[in-house]
Amino acid sequence: MNCVLSYFLQIIENDALYHCYKFLAKEGLITNKRCCLEKDGLCFPPQKEYDEDELMNNLNKYILDKTTFKITYKIKGYEEENIDYPLLENVKEELSKKDYETVKKRMEEQHHLCKISTGGYMINLNGNWVEYNKAGITGYLDDVIFIDEKNKPLSLHKKWFFDEHKLKYDEVVYEPDDIKVKPYMLNIYEPYDITGQKDEPYEHDEEGLDMFIRLIKCLCNHQENTIQLFTKWLSHLFLYEGEKPGIHIIITGQQGTGKDTLIETLTKLMGNKKYSPRPTPSVMYGVTIPLYYKTPNSFILVR
Image (cartoon, rainbow, N blue to C red):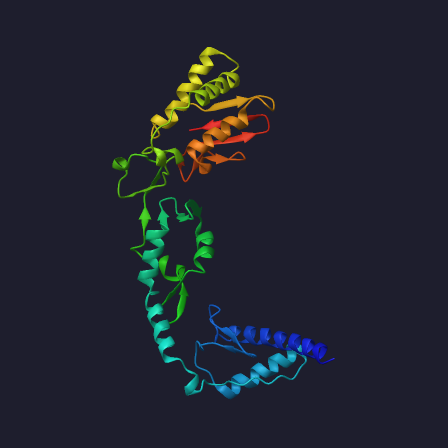
């Protein structure tokens, strides 16, 4: 019986605590979710001045209205023996690393957060470039917090949008040759996976090469002119990354003709980021990147 009673009382207590948090957040005493559970109450640094009697009176009335239970909350300060001053000093030191300029520098240098000339915003997340409009980047930066001069936490976008010295680019390019990249250009080029193996010893696989040549012949219906064109087109992708060959390749055929095998081979050479399982625009961020994708009975190579 005691266990059952305790269970229901905990449900009531948790519900009351939820409404307590909502009230304090609405009144502006808790901002940016800066609070934590502590025993049967909330621990938080008040974000504005308040009258203790008035606040508690209004809070307890609010809880009664929401839960129909008369629960009385009180403000309790910490007793001196329960304050861990060394820990507070460590926290203070950590917070000093979260000033605006430090957080901005980390986001711009590590994640390449920037504004581009189209009016949009770019950021690199886990190795993938993402383009946002203002609403999208605002949502992302909501959880990126810095501590302002008044020791209050704010979302980075609150200040970054108005920063005249934030990272900006006039042009987005996909350029393998770093020499051609100017300071005003954002280069989203990423080398093929095989590029990372160029310093490894080469082991010639005659059998594998013959199988790949036979695959190309099969996909090209054994037409010599088509075989030559497709072979040169593939070579161009790897030998001249910065130059567009001027044509797209579309290969059609029934299941079992080798389209998946070619996709798997190219994926190993170029990397998963160059392959999309569904049709995707070849123009991204205003530049054309190497891309290939599959449809039910065909696959398309775009460059």
